[in-house]
Length: 143
Image (tube, rainbow, N blue to C red; front, side):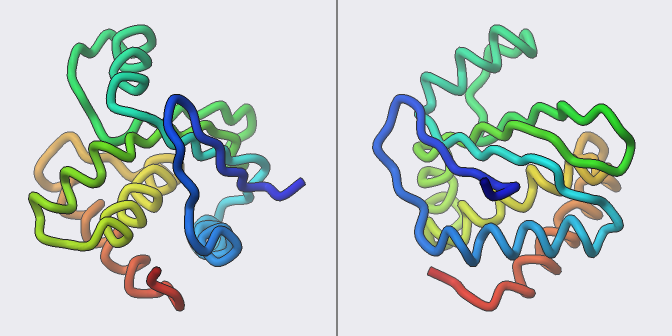
């Protein structure tokens, strides 16, 4: 079984270029000095992710991503990352980018959280965005 798996909950969605996305995220994790044990991306609806946000994080807001770090050993990634496809599509329109580019940004954003990057303060958010941009530019595929 691959170290990165893709699932869907509450929606019908098929990620394009799964093999390339899997390799891109793996390369990112390795480049940051971590080892990948298991990473599950679960694509879902706004309603599904809102329920997760309420139940596990006590947040009553819509979001595009929720990352659960299940790692037991430092430097070894085990995680479940939930992504709202509805929210990424809405944000793509808002930011005037393609659905694919926005989805890839959110995919790598979740991975970067697992690698220790934060986004709560303006300085942290700027560093996170720079890392997202860097790894997005390293993609050898787009669609």
